[in-house]
Image (cartoon, rainbow, N blue to C red):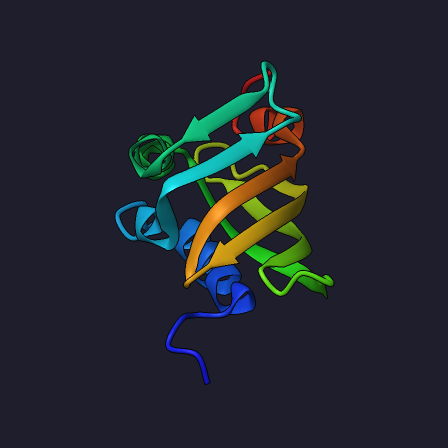
Length: 134
């Protein structure tokens, strides 16, 4: 058995940290030189390095929401470092009480227990609407 966390275990820690709104623990899941891309953000978002990931997740505590990950389906690939996860964030805006469901697909490359690359496809507009914007 490897001393490093599997891609599936790292994904679960990521989902747990995001839904529990624990931004202080999330950057530790990423390699120092990790690259995270959000192709569907407007404009597209690219985070390079753990410091950029830390800054990105720091906003999590300020968002007026509570949520959980549901319908999580993980697809293994021919590359043991890469998994594809399909899931939804289900939650509610804590200021308005408005419920939301945001679909997501993450393509993660995990090496030695850390995310080295991630492509995160979420419905950014849907999340913005749920939080009272766009």
